[in-house]
Amino acid sequence: MNCNETFYAMALTRISNFNYATALELYRTIGSAQQIFEHRNEIGDILKDCSPRLMEALKDWSEPMKRAEAELQFMQENQIRALTLSDDDYPQRLCECPDAPIVLYYRGNADLNLAKVINIVGTRQMTAYGGDLIRRFITDLRRHCPEVLIVSGLAYGVDICAHRQALAEGYPTVGVMAHGLDQIYPYRHRDTAAQMLTQGGLLTEFMSQTNADKPNFVRRNRIVAGMSDACIVVESAAKGGGLITAEIAQSYNRAVFAFPGSVGMPYSEGCNNLIRDNVAALISGADDFVKAMGWQDETVRRQVLADGIERDLFPDLSPEEQKVVSLLQETNDLQLNVLSVKSGFPIGQLTALLFQLEMKGVVKPFAGGMYHLLK
Image 1 (tube, rainbow, N blue to C red):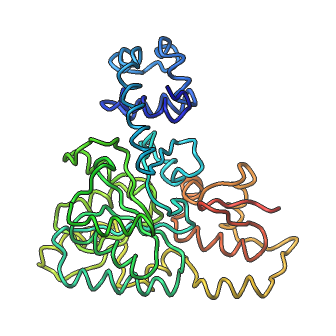
Image 2 (image 1 turned 135 degrees about the vertical axis):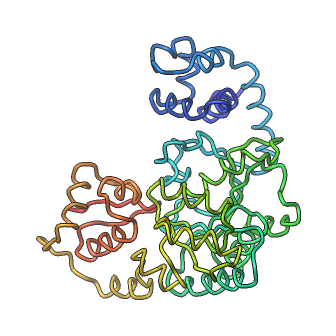
């Protein structure tokens, strides 16, 4: 029996499928799945509002451990990694979300903590207009930002078009799935999925032998939203999964954008409503998006750094810059999305502020969207 933290975390998810939010709270309170196992008979004393059903379920780990052992064997045979909340490779943006999965199953080679991560979502009934928007957007984005991870759900329509265009442009792209890694759904996308394993990857919170049942898609959408800096909705009807992802992204304080469409067109209605209701900002292309996010042209950024801007010992800071510095003085090495929540600045404005602070020699960016105060 494998007794490491990953093993216990996998077993814990089997116990808590019916109440994973409470299980996550318990995990964060105690600090590890192994500690939960070792204190399984004292859970009520540790978490006062833990449900009686979960407390009772946590007393018997025999079946969950047996299932975790089988899954570990499957993972070893198929080059799959399990990422827990405490792992450095776990998507750190997602880690901050209140309903983050305790374990993710990942197969691929993409860095899930690239400095820039976006998701592109929308209808399965994509029109030629939507396809043109995606191709032009990703092609133009490549000129501005050479390193971006593009996330979507591998579904028909907008999702698969975004994945394929990302591959064509040399971007890593990750498909988040609503089932286990023992299958590809839809099956028609298996060739694209195979290519993504060498230029991106496949990610899920579900063990093998888990089917793509309807509730799993909403759970999948929160991962798509949570692991990204921004959500871009290309086309959507008045109701659809893309809109759910956008609403979840907004609740996580992520930037949300939508392409407008013709009034009265069924697959533009959802995007137009997002813009009307101030859930999403209107964009017409990559230039709008990069400007809104404060993602400076990387060629300019590299040239500025290459010119060797000297660090000011006592730079003049704007009130907004000083607020960011004060937060980093309290707790250094904060992730971009955490800084956004603490400061109240939208991601786009905050990114621009951090760039100015970097140019002044006050902060330094690290992998995974982390920022370190140098002073």
